[in-house]
Image 1 (cartoon, rainbow, N blue to C red):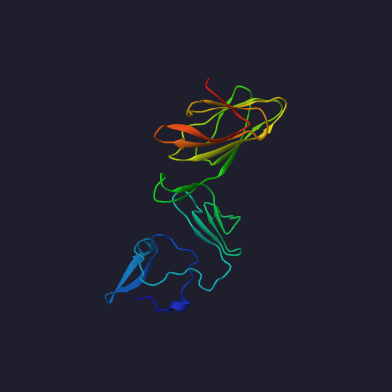
Image 2: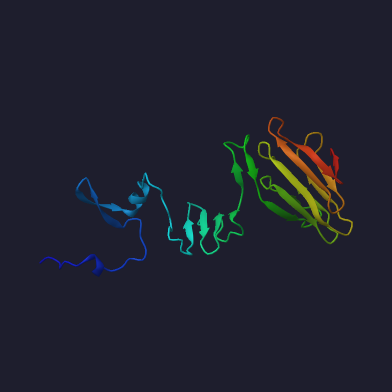
Length: 214
C-alpha cells in the first residue's frame, strides 16, 4: 500500500539543515537529489549573489575550520567583524590584516599587546607579530623582556607605559649594532624595523631609552 500523497505545504518544517540532508533538483529534465554539502560546494551563478536583500536586522556568520566568526555581519548596527562577533567599528579585524600580495611588498596592520613584569628575573617575551607593545613595571619591579625575530620589513613600536619605584625595563633582542635597550622612565620608547637581509632589528627612532651591547 502506497503512502498517501501530501502537498509541500503540508510537510513538516525544518528549521535547521544537516550536511547530509538532501533536496530534489531537476537536472537536464531528470529528477535527482543532492546533499546540502554538495549543493554549497558546487554553488555557481553568473548573477549577483545577495544575502538579506530585504535588509532585515539579522546577523550573518561565516565560520572557518578554526574560527566560528571568520566573517560576521552585525545586522542591527551595520558592522562587519573578522574574527569577532562583536565588532566595535564599521570594519573590525581581530588580529592582523595584510594589504598586498606578499609580506615584503604589502602593508601589515597589526594589533597591540601589553606586557607586565612578573619579577626582577623573569624574562617576559614580547610578541614579534604585534605592531605595538606597552611595557609595564609596577611596585618597584625591574622587568626583563626579550623580543624574537620579526617578519620581513615589519615595524614595531615599543613604549614604557608604567614604571615606578626606581624600576628599570630591559629589552634584549638581535639588533644592528646593539642587543639591549634600557628604559628608566615612562614614555621611553623605540621604533624598530626588521630587515630580512640582516636578520636584525634596526632602529628607526629612539626616545629616552639607551642602546648598548652586553
